Image (cartoon, rainbow, N blue to C red):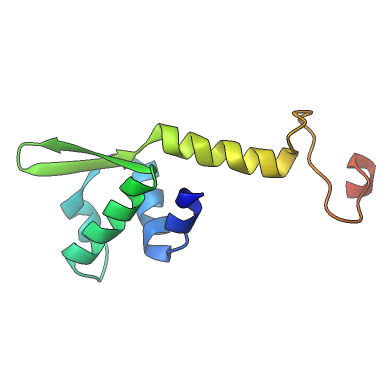
Length: 104
């Protein structure tokens, strides 16, 4: 899953967390880091390629926001891992566990 690879970097994790609070310009994002603007631009490019972020150009600015489709894809994948593919709504067992009664 490309989105997991993209989130493997702490800077990109922080960018996603910032965008979870709302849309930001690339300049707003860059000012929150101690790295160059081109480095932040590369991080945004990686997040866009992973489908986690989308960009909306408006005049001279570029506005970044989370891409709901990419975030949902990641959420669905985590849910499949957490709850299994059976769709029962109960948490899957870890090795050695037998079910809900073993989690008490």
